[in-house]
Amino acid sequence: MKRIQAFKLRLVPTIEQERLLSRHAGCVRFVWNKALDLQTRRLEAGMPLLSYGDLAKILTLWRSSKEYGFLSSGPVHPQQQTLKNLDRAIWEALDRTNPKRFPRFKRKGEGDSLRYPDPLQVKLDLATRDAEGRNLLPRIFFPKVGWVKVRLSRPVVGEIRNATVTRKAGRWAVSIQTERNVQEPTPRTSPEIGLDLGVVSFATLSDGTRIHPDERLLRAMERAEVRLRWEQRKLSRKYRKGPKSRNFAKQKLRVARAFEEVANMRQDFLHKTSTATGETQAVVYVEDLKIRNMTRSARGTRETPGRNVRQKSGLNRSILSQGWGTFLSFLEDKLTRRGGRLVRVDPRNTSRTCSDCGHVSAENRPDQATFRCVSCGHADHADVNAAKNILRAGHARRACSPGQPGEFVA
Image (cartoon, rainbow, N blue to C red; front, side, top):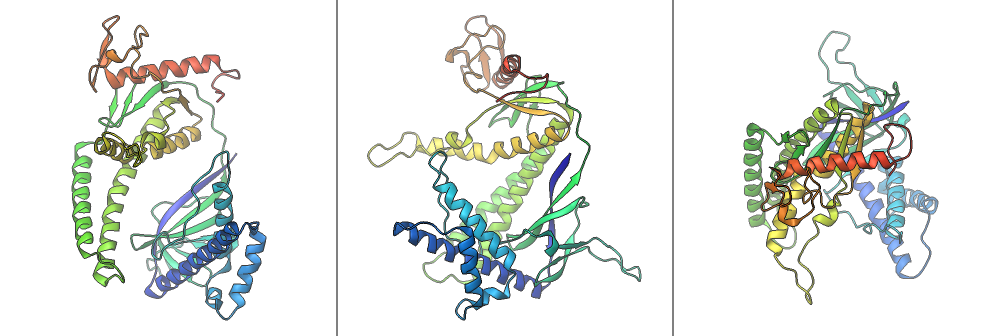
């Protein structure tokens, strides 16, 4: 079977190369904004949208014109790719069955990226020593930029399919997507476990194991979050209307790097936790949570204002800071690689049902951490009881699903 995998590496560009990358990213941003303005005007006038082919022809005219000739200083493939992304985003926003947010204009310095869809345009040189035996950094070649040094944090395996260069918090990185043939994993059906996600404890397993960051990581994240809040307060004091000062730009970069530090710690924990679970379990049952609906604001409208808005916003912030969606995505990918499976079950009444007798009542849970069945008297930790119910619901779903053993039908 073929496996598609991405490898993200940190770039070490020179000052001139960094200037070229910024210029090329600015050209891509200009093409996006210009094409989005053109399509928006056509929608407002009741005219049909231009297809990607029409936009590509207009891009050729722009690159050869006197007014927009600066676009020719950048590579054409990333500019064509941003037109493809825009065309797909507009049609997804206009889809009535599952509409998404309409694309917005991009501001300078936010979301700078360059996607090279043609693998022939990107070359990777992993040599670490020259002919004289001196140590060298591996390098990667980009059109109209040249060879850029890269920090090889892990080996890149497979044939390159495409590459995406991004800038985040003032640092450039490249994500290389590769394809290679691997042996198809042997399907596994045991062991199985139920997993309940929470806020107080990150995750609880049906065998009673409770997963949460260790004390060292918690202290490090707390220090990083304190630093982030401090940098954000300093940024708010430097804000002013109109043109922004250099000090504001410098402080904005500090805030971005402080936020990146917190995000990296959280992602590292999610990777390690999903790896440990994926290596020891074959089938993991989780609740099919609608995280977007769960974290929807309770503010309401002017006519019908919401209640307990402050408490709900704090709960939403706690849920989003856990990274449930990212964790489940990591876990599903790592289980699939080893022949396992992540199965989502109906989350209704998993926290109110007694795992011993099956009695359902809101009175079974007198507080956040305690579960005590009013029918049979069974007592357990609330999260452990919910994880056992998730495991039982997963077994029931598997028993009712047609197909081979280990296969599940949505």
